[in-house]
Structure formats: C-alpha cells, structure tokens
Image (tube, rainbow, N blue to C red; front, side, top):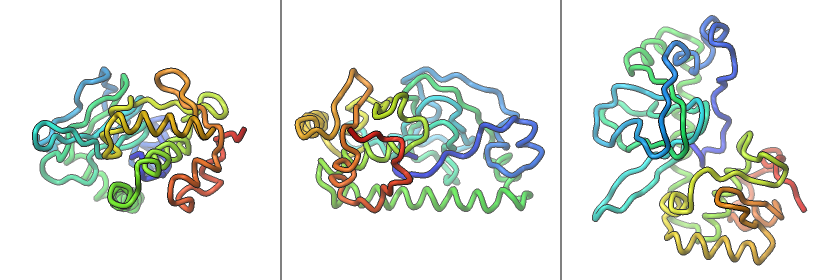
Length: 243
C-alpha cells in the first residue's frame, strides 16, 4: 500500500524459478491466469465473502469504502507486485477498484493459506506483510488525525516519489490517481487539494505538468513540509532530483 513506504514483493523472477525456491509470496500466484481489469472496474466488492486474494501485476488499485450519505473513503492504494486482501479472514472490508488499466492474478484463500502453512520460507514473509499492513494503518491514523492539509499532501507526494519506477524522468513524478482520489485518501476536499498544489507551486516545491504528472522542484522543501522528515530519509528519496 502507498503509505507503507516499502518495496513491492519481488515479482520479476521467472515463474519456474520462484515456484521452485518457494521463497516469495509472489510464487503462490504465478500459476494463476493473468486477468485484465479495465480502469474503474472492481476486483471485489465490500461485504462479499473474501474467497480470493489478488496480486497486482500491472497498474494501480484503490481500496475504498462508502460511508453515510454515499461519501467515499479511500483507505489505500496497491501497486504492481503487491497483494490485496492478505489480512482478511471473513468478508471484504473494502471495494478494490482499478485506478488504471490493470493486470492481476488471483488465488483462493485456502490455496494461499495452505501454501504459507507448509512453507518455512513463506511464513516469515507473510508475517512481515501483515506487519506492514498494521504499520500502514497506524501511519494513516496519524496522517488523518494530526496533520494539516499541506502536511498530508506533501507526505503523499513524498511517499509516492520514493516508490521504484514512480518517475519516468528525473524530477518528474507520475501520479496515476486523479485529484478526487487523492482528496478521498487524505480526508480533504478536491478544492483543498487543488489549492494546496497551487500554493506548493507558488513556493517552488512542486509544479503540475499535465493531468497526471508533478515536477518536484525541491525535494528538501517537500520533505520538510510533510511534517515528519524522519519518514523520508535520503536513501528512500534518491530518485527525486533537486533543482
């Protein structure tokens, strides 16, 4: 998930090698068919029985819930290599929906749990994944309860920029989700997100380029304005160019 600030599970190994070693949770998905999911389509629905887990192979998936009067809350984003639904036991607590055109693999929960149960290599990785999910939930609680709009948005941009492959060119950040998605994730209105981006642009921190790109002009200012610079050490932000 986005705010976990961790590497996606390795999915670049050939399927045969990964399945042979049994050292990656990704290997559990490799024998499953690759499924295309068009942008805006759901992988699963809130309230349905969680019979399957999903691995995002390409694209971005958002997790969302609908609360009183039809208001949408986005609780996380999943990127290529990440697993959706690992912490669930009963029903889906969210609707998982494709932000962009995606490719996914799915396995039954029973198959996944059986593979983890009989593999000494997979059990520690599964526990680590659950720990990451818990840490992400705590990070999101802090972000929503204690940070102001500018700090929330800067935290979001800095974390997104730290992801491998997030920048097609140095200093240029690809933002696959739209501003309404960002607003619903950060607990803000779309107007507040737009105003905050304008303020950051005026302060030479980030500048919008097109619908889905941001040019980061000052990594240092961005991290400072996030409200918690310790979350973004230099080694995690080296792909951002300072101008």
